[in-house]
Image (cartoon, rainbow, N blue to C red; front, side, top):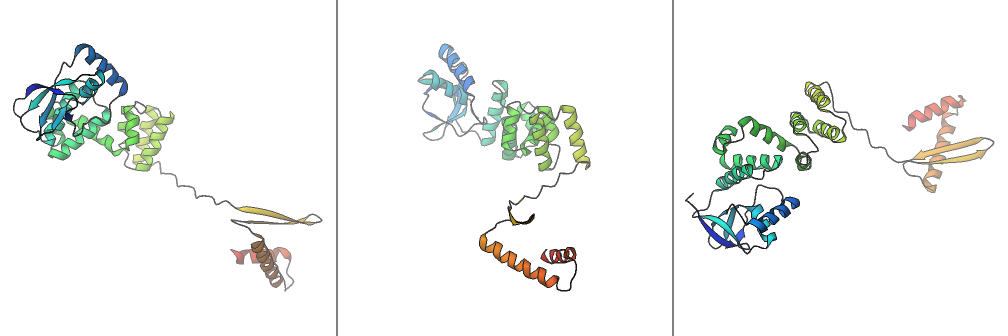
Amino acid sequence: MAEPIVQQVPTSKPVSPGNIRARLIEEEQVSLAQSIAQNGILVPLLGHYEGEPLILDDGHRRLDAAKRAGLAVVPMLIAEHAPTPAERLSLQLVVATQRQGLTVTEHARALHELMQETGWSASEVSVRLGRPSPATISKLLSLLVLSRDVQDQIDAGRIPMSSAYQIVTVPDATERERLIRGVLDGRLTRDRLVAQTKAVKSGRIATPPRRPRQVTRERVSIFLGEGRSVSVSAPTLSVEGLVAWLADLAERIRNAGADGRPLAEVIKDISGKGE
């Protein structure tokens, strides 16, 4: 890009096409706004024009804080030409790592987007950005196999980085979820997690089968006097259905017992036919 020049631009003018940060942290923005109110903006924002719109390439936190501090204008280095998406991502990555760092998964997503945009390998990204190492880039990218909710847990420090890197080595998503729950519940220490992941990958631990869903059943007992009773259980029961079932049962018992067999054999016989 051509050498940019510094201009004072209204805080309402820059338009953001997107930023590698997933969100701005309120406490940090309040603190930055207080600093800017006292000292002004020490590092100019970066941008370029695309026709009338002034596109913000870097400085999203400073612009937000400047608005909070009530500044009317902000200093901006304005380039003559628009950066490519890859140049903008590279610029934001370099600047972010030199100042207020990105969260771990924000960094991972930005690296992934840059590599998708440029076709660069991890080694090429490392050389062009000056950091991190290719191995670190590969480890960061591996975190993207996890759901966004889990990534947020990593950024919040609820899942240690060492544990996260261990979990993503497990290829089965169901097993990963089980291990994540164990870490969040405090049941899996670092050593136990390592042992569990090794066992899973070696096939010594199989995913437990899901229990079949139990169907709620209705049950009634009919007392016939002199210590006699009949109990009936079914998914649903009604008067008409019970009457029809009892009539059918009586007929089956009568037919099965016509040869004079003992009651126990008759019941066993009709029970087998009823399955």
